[in-house]
Image (cartoon, rainbow, N blue to C red; front, side, top):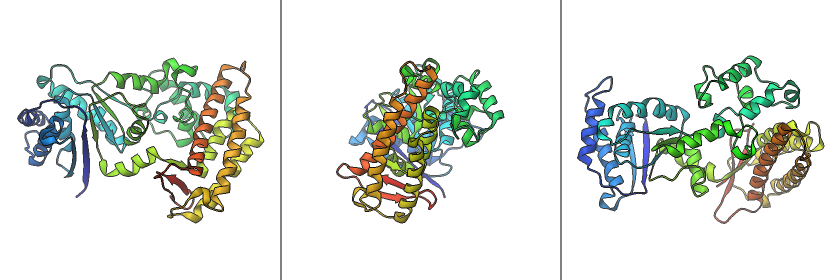
Length: 394
């Protein structure tokens, strides 16, 4: 039997009647394709969630473990919606995010309406790399710029790029999940950005139409926000800088929460991060010593970390990793200086690429320095396959 854990964290008390929840559950499930089937486990979970939301017995946290077929999603959604409180639902997988946003919540919006004073409003919020970036799309569309991307788009599929460009003019969300095909990794990497390199709406030439920012706008107005555990972890670590203020937090697929949240609030360094940064910076610097240095660091980290796989270590004191971190620090500072040398009167696109490269460099440099001088209570170790060892800290 496959089990999924659900964790409900309560931040706001409101009187609720568990009997009302049970009645609503029975009425709603009658509209399911196999409607009318009573599930005692589902009802028990719904009542338990309602009691936690209500704070009965001084409880404001709940961990639920239930077998497949219990109907767990409706068991937590119905009391959360009846509570009329802003709710965050964080999942471990994009598939469950899409199921909630495309199936479960629209179903409840239709069939729970008579128990609610106003329509259910919900939004899905994913990481930036799940949305097409209009600025990157514009840059890749220019043949002369594409040639300077030095690997970022050279393995991209031209037909897929054209299809994404057409889709970007029609989509309301820019969400990769809405594409009618699955683009290969190189193609999608050419038209999206991560949070570590995005300058934000106000500093990007295409900021007004930014799909990631529009998703945040929709989330700010919604009663229920469906997101992922990684974003939730970053929000916790940054004192609410990512998600709107909320009253309830439901962690679905919570069996994966520990690993995902630890990664979100910790740091990681591995060879691939230097290769990725090289591709980003190559759109600004073309050929330079700084780019060669990044390629060299990527290989050095791969070779050095593999010897520590599955082990804890103190990076700054390790005779190999310590000096390598110091070298990376020096080279990344040099890269920052080179990127800052882009003239202020350069073309808008050139300045936008330089800004993204600077942000990505700063993100990696911050990770390097966190390993060189870790805060108290943090531990470091190396994990991953032999061809991709990762230095982690949490």
